[in-house]
Length: 331
Image (cartoon, rainbow, N blue to C red; front, side):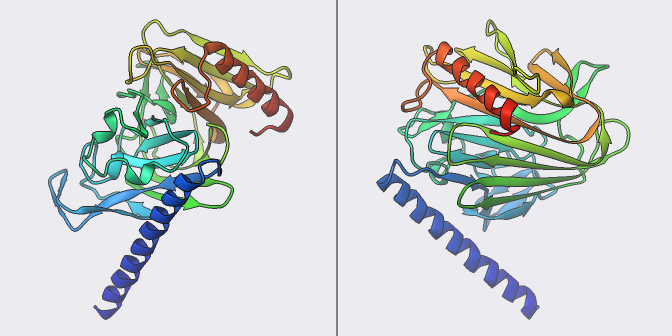
């Protein structure tokens, strides 16, 4: 009993130190807006209690690691903004840490840290326009942008993470990168269950996130993609040496004002590519049967300060990145 109490006290001290450090980092980034940074965050409630699938009461605290409680699901009011946050000067993303497993976009109007403050003044306040920006993508029951699932060819559907034995997430902030590690144990779609570990890395530059997926056994149908919107065409690009390719969309496809524009893209290695499929809701890249694959995704919001404000500049940026990938195999 004494040992358990000791562990709790140490954990509490660590969490308090972690929050103070992030608050300090936020204030410093506001004072030096030109300083590049990257940031990964995971924040959960403590001091409340579970009532069914809802977490009642409590206050948010940042943690480095979390194993999801069995009661947790979508809209449980347990995880701040419902998932893991990734951020740099230009953009923010969140991965829903529940069965949906979609990646969403937080559009930023300012170049400093915003995630530590997002969702603190109301569980879904980030859906509304604010001085820092807002949630700009309606992911729905899709992969959102660049998330991962398994394509069910028979039913023309992308299966996410409805059946998982356990999910553990960890966030790590380093000088030149920030990333989330997520371990899904016993992910079952059809056939045998597998273990999947994903790593989502954001850097103190540009808008892209690198995704590394590793499984304990080979799996067919592993996929990624971009949510579809009516009247928004999908475009494809292939590198000169045919090593990498992208799918992308651009247009009025945000939750912000009507004249708002957003570009979204996924870069993928052609050696891992099996086929492209357009389901009812998702532009889908299906990979060959594999145990591991790496790819990139990015969003570019027209309201981002000094950002890409035209379709032409967006696709010029994608083509430059395609050339870099062709030469270096990484961004």
